[in-house]
Length: 295
Image 1 (spheres, rainbow, N blue to C red):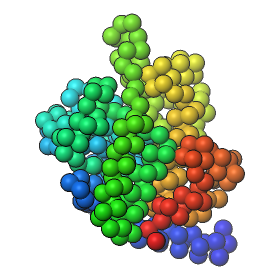
Image 2: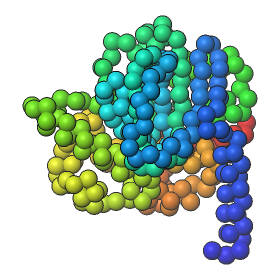
Image 3: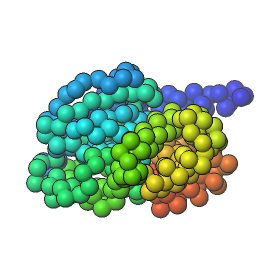
């Protein structure tokens, strides 16, 4: 790296650090229309479950980066940037961080009527996945709040986001085997795979055979079980995580699409552009502007 490149990289890192310092570990970002959005940066590093505690509100939690194990009302799952989970008051919950600390989430606290209107009557699983378009809507809402958008617009955007989450939320199956022991083994395999992929760019670069070996499975068995449990292929899921990692980096102040393409294992910037448009419906250059702290 020449001196000019080193200076540019140092400037980019300074900009990213400035963005990080403006955000707390638990900071209320939006309070509008009776809904509160908290930005959570988790520093807990225990690989085993911590708790239990009890939920004190109706919440919709959307994970933006990293990942962690959650146990809520007896259901255990891995939460990552592909979606989030729901809580109801009184839910007993625990959390563990096998992939390490530093995950980032948005906790949206809503009233019982709003929660019931959007989420009651849906599958009992607390964990859900959301589409790339809904993920972009979530991140764009936070960027608008950082830019100082007025409360009326933020409240309207919040309701649109919750509608989008309710409409696009997909729930993983729990009845993948005819025997309970088989179903539990399949769920555990998917959970361990998600935990490994949450390790970031190095894990997302692993070939299928190495990923399977890392969770004690064969490539064929892992591929078949992952699709059966999640309803999507490993390739699609991995690409979702890669695109969302790029979006998070844009939020954190990285502005070079070429650098992001290389860092996250895309063949080139054109490859990143194709996948980004396919998963979110938008070009990365447009998303860079949408997610910027600058108006």
